[in-house]
Length: 131
Image 1 (cartoon, rainbow, N blue to C red):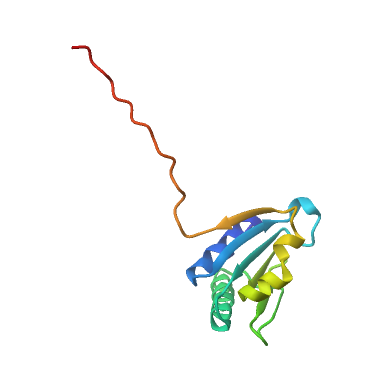
Image 2 (cartoon, rainbow, N blue to C red; image 1 turned 90 degrees about the vertical axis):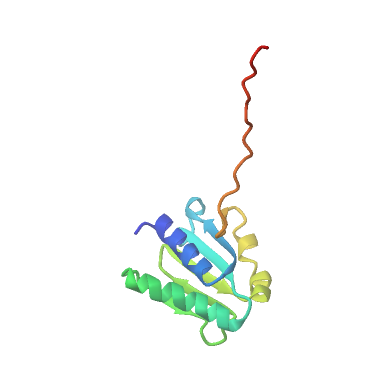
C-alpha cells in the first residue's frame, strides 16, 4: 500500500470510531522523516484508545504492521508509526498544547470528514418558446 493510500485508510478508520478533527498533513515536500502525519482527537481517554486500537487491528488484518507505537500508558497522546505514515491520536487539550499542525505549518493539510462533499448549486436553464 502506498503512503498516500495508507494515510487515507488510517483517516477513514479513525472516522469509524468517531474521531474528531481528522487531518492528513502531507510532509513529502518538507524533507521530513515520514511522508504523512494523520492527526485526530478523541473526546476522552477511552475513545483515544478505541481509535488507536481500531486502526491498529484493522490494518493488521490488511497485513500492515506498525514499526513502533507509544502512549498507551497515559492515553493522552497515542502515536503509531507506520514508517511512511505516523498516526497521532490526542485528547483535545494535549493536541492544542503540542500544536503539531502549527509546527508543520508548511505542510499541505487536508481535513477528512465522513460528510459527503458539498455540491455546488446548479442553475437550471429553461428554454423559452415564442408565443
